Length: 172
Image 1 (cartoon, one colour):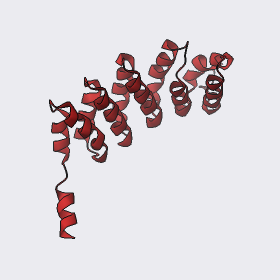
Image 2 (image 1 turned 135 degrees about the vertical axis):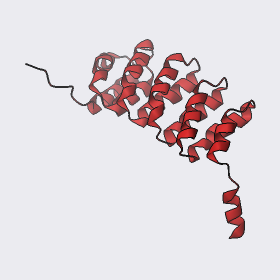
Image 3 (image 1 turned 120 degrees about the vertical axis):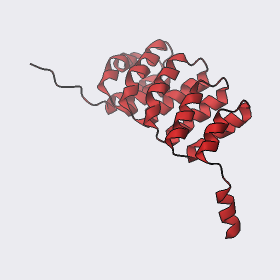
Image 4 (image 1 turned 180 degrees about the horizontal axis):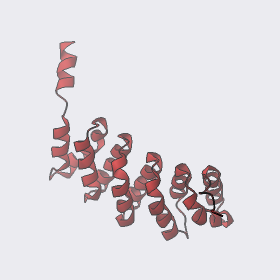
């Protein structure tokens, strides 16, 4: 029993996580961004948000995944910004998935812009994320995609459209 307590007590602290995310060693930052999902503190969340622009792809991906695991809604706006700046497709997919999983409708405009920017080959995860957020603002970008020649796009769009809540009532 003493040995188990010793092992638990020897784990990193939130301040260790923050310090390691700022390390000059990319392997340390990558590993730390991955395990940070186990440390629910505002300082860890802020440090994870800070490494969303890390030069290393794996650090960015792990930071995104940890922020979702921590259900960090403070990350929604930084993630939407990251989506507009991100050039790596793996990180971009992770960000889109994270925005859908966090369930915060502040992400809707960024997801719509992302889908519109890739309308020639619509990313299925962006369609899914908009459906998961169930916000009527997505209707104008999703509805025309029902005419796509890609059956996967059509199926995902139909699923997303079924989830949309009606918009505000018209004044009249």
